[in-house]
Length: 282
Image 1 (cartoon, rainbow, N blue to C red):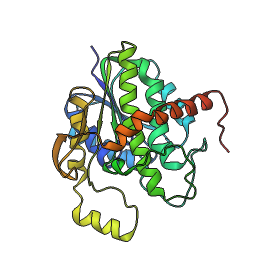
Image 2 (cartoon, helix red, strand yellow):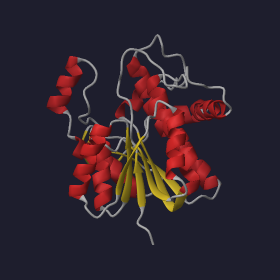
Image 3 (cartoon, rainbow, N blue to C red):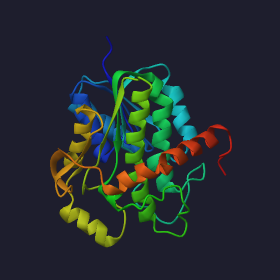
């Protein structure tokens, strides 16, 4: 029997790479994705040292273009997977910009692309497979206005909305999989206050250097989500900012968004429009 296969988006650096290392040590073969060949080469070197028995492949995947998601699906072919970690994401980026299909950048990269990736891969998940969606502590500050007009708003609003949407997607996708008797479960995690690639103001970057935990610790909730029971949300223990992983409650913003139902239905509608050829690159 072939080894289990884990797919980690954004697996070439930061939390994604730390998650990939843990999964390789746990006996998985790996497919890691990212946009930078340079980062990929460094990641492959680290992985070869950390878990020499794991087969590790890197594939370029640009989540700002749904065509790239389709290419990845074709590249994977008929191979079965056991774990899909939807980890990659855009940080708070300025100025306003859109993805190839016209979505606001954070919404498109962090949310829509991962929903689409999960859709196109779900029929190749082995029995007992797991999908993990990575969110953020700032999702609790979202007003749930996902897919609205963001051009006149702060990019931080779009970022936290995208992370709220990941939680809403995880819960709804888990229900759909269960209703269709597919033996694939879904969990969620957020890394708390974890050091990442530089972004934001000088004050934010300084705060990260002094206060944020390293990626090796921020990855712990994500790793826990890979192996726990279904429908659980993981985060750091202390104020959901630092510390060992623990199960955390969904924020009220998610409960409210689930009651409304708009994020799930609207997101699926946008993907249907793309598949129908209505959303074309500029």
